[in-house]
Figure (tube, rainbow, N blue to C red):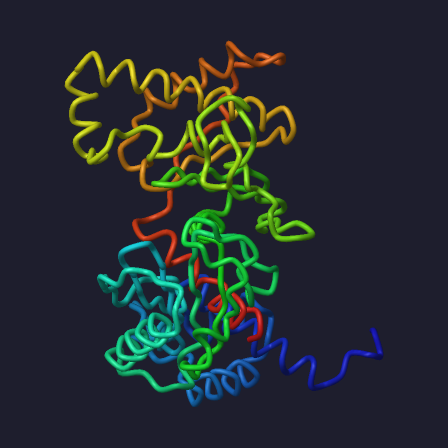
Length: 374
């Protein structure tokens, strides 16, 4: 036995193992915990008492039994801790609270046009504080606030390193945290969406996540982790050049993937996704032609990326609820036509993330960090 492992280490490991087993399986009896973890009943009982005292678990009814006394069921208390996700957009702010299971327990949308001024940061901080107050939780229960932004951020989430959409490059997290008493961090919105995708499924491994919304965003997933890169801009495929003589991009260059494969590139002025797809599904020829051009450019871009990183692709973002399997099939065929390494093996998939994947993904890292510490 490793002599460096202390009695305290063993106690902490037992405590952690019991909590995580209940977390993973939903409800368990004391006897089932002891059997599955090969621990004594007194050890299990001692840790269950401690977890109950800390309000991390609670008794949750009893299991059915045909003989003898019915065993007490234990379950985690999902709202023992919460985290807040805030999605900052040009005209509005969406905020929500998630519990330890990643379930949204409350959500609100607030019209708040962005301005790079202290008055905005104060106003949003007050709104966030009032939202937290409405949850009826203590300060200790709030793990932190993730601010999802249409921008690149430093790896530690303390600074916006590239924010041309809202023109806030260089903004420090202290603009908000000085008014809030909880840990705060910035997170790139596409990486938030990819984080939620990782949370809701366990079969990704490595993948490229494309978030197709008003603006395009990307994330690289390696070994079930978001790959940030040395300077935080891994996965920013939106600024990959498709045609240097193409349309101008907000980054100041021309012909970026953003200018061909975002919702802004697809829709005409004043048009909505609801209207576009209603017309498309009804067989309107101009919309079908526009959609074919969009898929063609998306296939060109996916093929370029796929040649560099030969992994699965996940299509998410605001466009994903409108997509059908036939769209993905056409996209596969278009990539097949363009690639130097043709294969009919499907590698492009629709996101399984629930609605609000961006603000949920902004909150999830605080939940995950808490679970990792138990």
